[in-house]
Length: 456
Image (cartoon, rainbow, N blue to C red; front, top):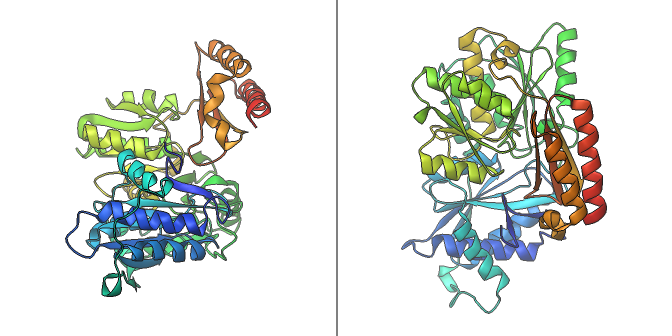
């Protein structure tokens, strides 16, 4: 990763790390690099999530885009995967999203899609970053007069995306299903309930009233307790939900709660989709692409269906790169980023949800039974808070190395230990997989304390 671009674009605390000045530069040089070979006036879509800083950053980003003569097309609040789709649907030269995804309100981010709806590769991001960080390397001549870019607004973006997402239902009708949704007070707040209702489902919604400050606040895919409690209330009222869907702030993630209140993570959803795809002859090379954070149970469970799992580094960009290079159709992360390349070019929470719901209705099974196709091994995840500049120094500290080596030896025969720096936050993530969750929690907490004490 570069100095500015992490695993998912440029991200930081808005107005402190991600300033309007930086947003202007990202817009200016991002637009220039992505469109410098076009022979027409470039068109770049801009979408946002619901956090309060989006207005400030959108103005600065737009100004940067217009300064190089491109046309900025504002879509308003809309899911990240919608921008990926609409970039292709509107025949735009690029798309950009202002969002910090699952992060809390003080954070924000900027990420680009190319004209084909794919996130940028490392080389393109490095070129953009090189312009931003080197003031002496500037664009030779900026446009003036009538060559300066213009801003237009599109008011049909939400509906255009909804109609696209609905087509991801193989059966085209979800009548008879009762669904609970947690929209995280984010970008899915309008599109997800509307799409599912148009497909015939009975929909009950929480956290669909964003006010600029409440995105991901004790809700959505990072706080499943709220959805679980909502589903319990529906049962008490006599309107039990068949399934609960939890999106994150920009709706590129999906996590699920079954009818009994149990969590169904991204690994399980991938497994369900993969088995269904194989039955229908859609699973290319009988392969699923996951990350090193995916549960070993996914690999073991899919092996029973003659499906192999290939693992990559953590980050949906790496999953996508492997999918493209190997011509695979399903990939994703335990966190709920699920990519179905026959549907969209990036992780799409709503598309994943509609695909899952179609399988649920076709199978005539409860969600808990459908999810039993993947047997998840116990796993503990702990975050160690560290300074951003120290995230890459884990293997340089002898005390930390000694603790990691001891844990790896301890779990070598009946589990595994994974330590990795977060690509988007000042954290080091610790994952232990094994058979004894209580001891795993103690071990993970101990290692997290050591890392935070040494690198915090």
